[in-house]
Length: 160
Image (cartoon, rainbow, N blue to C red; front, side, top):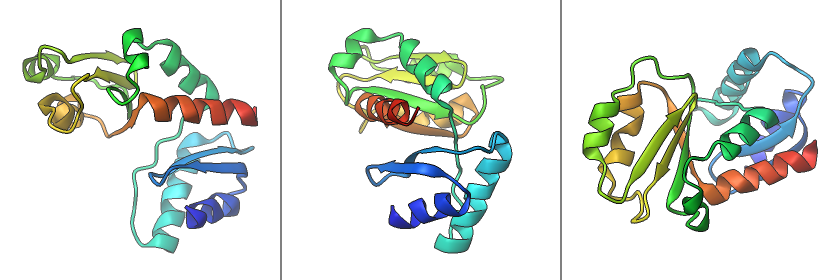
């Protein structure tokens, strides 16, 4: 994560904070070209770390909206069972019928714009729905549990 902080510093990021070892970074930057910034981060990671990640950026307002729009408030008491899939783009033709056919009786999901909410009280480790969501939604996705999402929001608000 130290290398990742250095990359963000090279791109003029400020107040850079990382959370756990999964590439979560919260930062301030004056650049408003998110597409260009995302590409720049990916290129710098390739140059320094020799792999090309998919980089997904959200501003504070977008993250706040995703948290507020949570359709499964009961899952907030089960932060490991509630997950948010952050999508690179709003799915144009998601296969919701197939997703529905894969869910267990306890699992519930909702797609709102670029957020895929999954409440899996029995966990996502063996969930066929979780395993197939990205492919069936048709968009690159990165998943975080509710605890991580709330911590990232708290960190982002602290920077504001």
